[in-house]
Amino acid sequence: MRYRRAKTPGGTYFFTVNLADRTRALLVDHIDLLRASVAKVKEAHPFTALAWVVLPEHMHAIWKLPDNDCDFSMRWSLIKSGFSRQISKTEPIGKSRMTKGERGIWQRRFWEHEIRDGQDLLVHINYIHNNPVKHGHAQSAAEWPYTSFNRHR
Image (cartoon, rainbow, N blue to C red; front, side):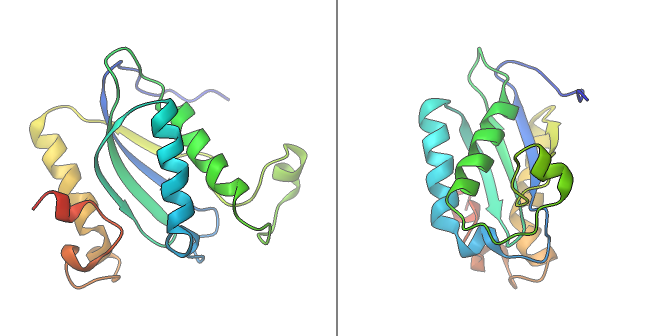
């Protein structure tokens, strides 16, 4: 099944990416592996990260893609697979995933929203930076260690 996604070369996009098991804390437990996976993809397929937050079981990001490029799906696929290859196989894997040779770490899909203008960008940056507070992981955005918040102060 093909999903309808925004495809604006050079666009700016907000993303939500989730683990399949929302009770696990793989993303913060293995933050160095996640960062390495992102860096490797970013080197081969550049993008600018305008804001990012990593929570135990999901993350949000805003990316600006190069002027001639709109393929954020490929980048997320590479980040997710690169991270997954570095994690021990301890997760339960359903028959559907097993048949397709998939791990059970990530939700298959992710949410994306194309940023429309400066106000929309500000709303989404604030949402990202306040997410650890919203989920009870920190008293303030500045306290959470896995965020771009302190870059924006």
